[in-house]
Image (cartoon, rainbow, N blue to C red; front, side, top):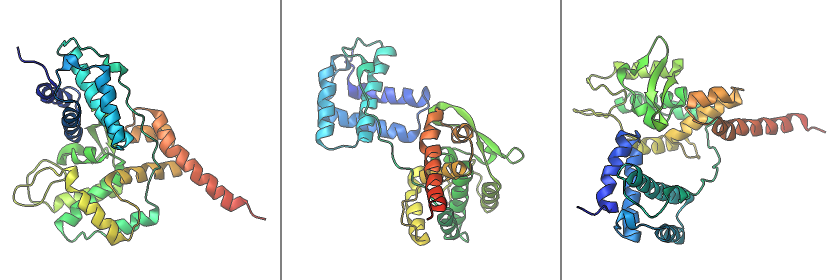
Length: 295
């Protein structure tokens, strides 16, 4: 019987994550890369022989390299997940309790978002006379108008959106089905973009050329970077910052944290409160200071 090592179990585990746990393709790529790194650091070990000492060694190596808490966390999540899969699904008698593997907590990052002026400058800098430009405008308006994740926007098909209900049913983070709500601006640009297309591809956002395919996240970095420069915006602009912008705008306009949670598809209400409501409150306090502290 073939020995169960990290290498010859990894792909089976990744397939299980994709099919049963509905992990996003980007997460699968990340986990695969992290598992390869683990093999380089502690060797392609038999899974049943992995001990707590090996986990400590792995963490020590990662910290010596000054890896970020996020990177280290993904590495730990990868090996922890592989061990859990081996124990629960493959019934391998492992020496370590996977639940004892701690994953570093991510430090709370400052929320970066665009102001109304920056949003308008970014929008107006997009050249909609080209197919790529019109597609990009429709995508940006979708991100701003729904507050969705980029993976969720790119998973949409032409027939996903109900124009009557102004919503779409999607499979979001954690394989949970939820509703995506569209505003008038996003629907206008999506319709304008679709009317310009001649292909039959079912995906809402596709590449250009003779054989269009569904647009991928990695196709977009250069567009956002170039447009930020053209718009004269100094801060970083990414699809996720469009999501932050939408959520922050709702919070600034006194939207309830409960509604923001549902619109963004957060699993925990506290996440919405910590990131957006508290930020809006700080901005309002600052405005109050400017308005009322006068001698």
